[in-house]
Amino acid sequence: MLKGFKEFIMRGNVVDLAVAVVIGAAFGAVIKAIVDGLINPLIAAIFGKPDISGVWAFTINDAQFSIGLILQAALNFLFVAAAVYFVIVMPLNKLAERRARGQEPEPDPLTTDQELLTEIRDLLRSRSV
Image (cartoon, rainbow, N blue to C red; front, side):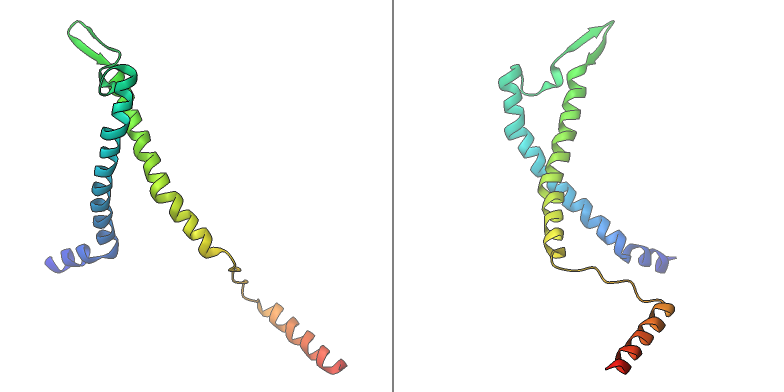
């Protein structure tokens, strides 16, 4: 039982996933700093509040509704998605594009018929010379 658990933990995809979670948490801290240090002050300058979670909030029969809270979550998602795209995805795509430049894809291997035809062609060329 412990051997199976050890094999499960030591599989490459589990280790890769653990690394991704740790990197994701660290990257989340960077995004939070950008949002708290840049985006929220801009929102405060526009709306007069530190974030938009309190904007368009109202109460009906002691039930509190907040459209701004939904907008704040949507904006945070967009900020994280934009940061991931522009900081990670786009540079890696450019790097892969640079690596692929100048490299021709490998031709498909010849079938048996094509190999025989190639041999016949080469034999005919050698006889005519």
